[in-house]
Length: 505
Ligand code: ADP
Image (cartoon, rainbow, N blue to C red; front, side, top):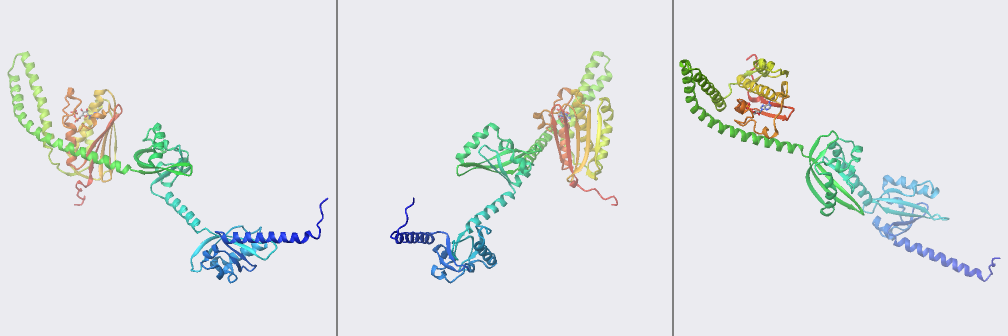
């Protein structure tokens, strides 16, 4: 049975309770005053009856100036004031219905504004409430900066990826998905090892580990797009540690234009070298050809005379041999002179399609004999100022080369000739499905005397002559070939090399 309170115990209890209340009050006061959060005790109309230092600092006043003189609404920005009053009333009347935290803009004594998060809690059984204010300006700024950074990254012109420790893509921006031709979901299913094919897969582990030491590294590589195309890229890969998590950050730039420009420059350089070589060989050839021409004319003339006189059969055979070999040599000399002379083209308005048709007609018999099917795709072309016969010489040469390559190898039976206009150039292509050209020979094709047909009367001058003629027209000639598949020669001649007179002129 519980002991009953005696009369003497009553005053002692009051003392203890008062003591407890005093302790609670002093604890509350200490916590209130020392808190880093702005705090105020409000009466029911919102007047601040008690304020702490943190609040005073926030509104840029001192505690005494605030207490009893200001309602907290005065410190709320005018645009938020009504909202603040409603919030305050609702928190007091129906605390469960109002959100625990609310955000307002607070204006300090000097007009400076602060983003703050507020909480109003009612002291049970009193008219008083406790206001707590946390400044979130910096947090908001940081959040805003985060959002702005994200916006900048998402809209950056260069591709950016975040990778996890194993190289799996965690995030990619819009430029990255454009670069690789995937949608964002598609990229997220990839790893850097799938994308960057310029680095062997087994080296990736080592590379990622090394990055943890070096922090960052730059290199050129190749990325594979979704459509299979391979792009040359310049990349920076950096390592970042956040807490105990490891991430990689990749920055990639498509450098196709630069690589193409480099290739073009190399091509120009090699064309320049070739032109230089051709010019010096041309000079030499012209000198030699002249010297040989005279004795050759003598050999041909005298052998013909002897042939007419000779009755001896054996001697006649030998003389015929001398005569035909001398003629063969004369032909070579003639070619040499053509190559060396490379006269200025006599430009006149020409229709390149006419030249193509005429050249094919000239070779029609041989092509038919060899069972070669000819296909033409002749585009609509503007008139070109060019030397008709020189261009015909180029085309006939290319057609004969294709015929001979197919006949010699026994491979190929089709010749396709196309014409078209592209970016201010007339472009002619001659394609065969013959044996193709060995890659190591591709660079030498236009060199004078380069031939793989020496045993078959080849002089190696045909393509050098073509090259010279096309250059004289300000154009370019190139060959592309796949061994065993065939060869395409492309001739491009600029339309701006001279404009055709208008029909009325
Ligand atoms: P030639 O025909 O006297 O050998 P060219 O300068 O015309 O001299 O050609 C040089 C070489 O280029 C040829 O010997 C041949 O090896 C190669 N070539 C040219 N056209 C073709 C072609 N359509 N297919 C394969 N090889 C070719």
